[in-house]
Amino acid sequence: MELPDWSISMAGLEYLVFFPFIVLFQVYAWHCYHKNKLTVRVRHMVWSSLFFVYLLAVIEITGPGDFRDIGRYGQLIRPEEINLVPLRWASFFGLTANLLLFMPLGFFQKLLWNRSLCSAAATGFSFSLLIEISQLVNRRSTDIDDLLANTLGVVLGWFLCRFLFHNSRKKYQPCGYPPFFLRHAEQFSIVLMFAVNFLVRPLFRYFH
Image: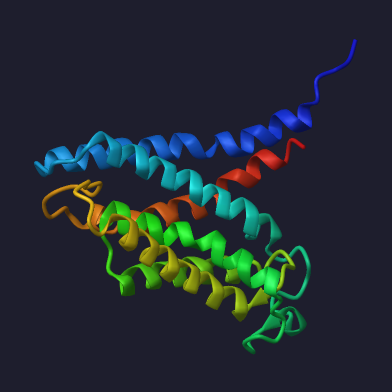
């Protein structure tokens, strides 16, 4: 009789730990919409839930550090693993991958919240910068090329959404003027997912 592979089970829990936070976030967002008498369609909530899934995929692919990595490798700032010169370490595959990875971020921001190009680019830049800084603690290279390519990917995704939905009458974003929390929903979503990955998810890795 074979024993169950507990390492696989606990790896699954690492992903499941995100979902209670996502559900609570969405429930609170729905409450805010109704409390402020704003019209919100179910499809908006569905698409915004998919946005959380996308953020989880980005976190998994990029591999930002967590609190367990702080001090694990001795020196925090390692100049040899930081590139601040554009196109110094860049490869065509790496740049293309970073562009494609962050295009949905610009697409979602335009589709769900009708963000301006500058606002979407600023959010993408900040998210990418947060990832790059966190990679200082887990010995992954911190590269300005990734930061620039990710931001450009957000811009391309924003234009793609505008092109596809420019003449469409479909409206995914809520109607009305929402309060502060809802006006910055994607930023709060990013901070939430990053915080869970940095502080909560590592707790389940102790069982591996």
